[in-house]
Image (tube, rainbow, N blue to C red; front, side, top):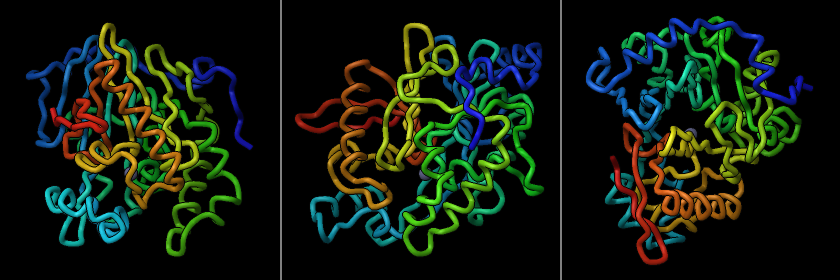
Amino acid sequence: MPSKPTSPEAARGISRRSFCQSTAAIAALTVGALPLASVQAQTRVIGAASITTFSDGLMTVPTEMLFDAKANPSLKPLLDQSGMGEGQAKRPLNITLVDIGDRRILFDAGSGPNFLPGLGELPNELDAAGIALDSITDVVFTHAHPDHIWGVIDDFDELAMPEAQFYMPDREWDFWDSDDALAAMPAGREAFAVGAKTRFDAMRDQVAMIAYGDEIIPGIEVVDSRGHTPGHAAFAVHTGDQAVMVVGDALTHPLISFQHPDAENKSDMNTAEAAASRARLLDRLVSDDMMLIGYHLPAPGFGRVERQGNAYHYLQQ
Ligand SMILES: [Zn+2]
């Protein structure tokens, strides 16, 4: 069993970090002043936070692994409109970095060098933006799928962000750390379970278990969005009078997730729970007038939601 510190704040005392470095970085992370070599990275200043998304690459998957347009013909025009109608879906991987106060918080760690060719670009993208991996103070995980967690270790199986405190939703850790995970994987996905455990082992001494509703870092709230995986979490980043929701894989398609939030997404482990989570998140995003960042939404992943009758409309920002 992992150690389960009762307070993540206490737990993070185990890693040292340079406040001076962090403060200088915040000064550099102003829109227009950031020396971005990368065309992908996009920075927004939202309240007290400077928020940048980085691309970990572009993942191509068969459309039928995500949506079944035969069973649900109303999805077909939306798949066509989003370029997924020909059988292949190109999915961006948008990784969020938040600089706020003395913290530099990464949401998910990308795919790393061993998942799929063309992915694992995060370290290069950070380097191009002048951001050192050891300047990252916190890494917060939405869930333990390969494109979100495998990048926590590098080519040498060492922690890629050695100074960081890691945070994993407790329900997510318990599922992937048990033998249930391997048994629950469909044929061909066994590596998801084995790979998650390898990463858990690497971060075991540096990870805090977090629960829905917790404030894990000042201003960072854990939001229940279970369904895609058993312990999937979204994160509300409160930045003064504004807030941004990092939604992970709870909202993944710019049309279907919003216009048909009930529609089955075959990448969700629990269809009913995932649909219920989408409904809750969408309602809150509109009610609280929050911007969102989607891991697989069109790059750079920033958007807003409008209510439209009984459904919603996504506005890329
Ligand atoms: Zn994903």
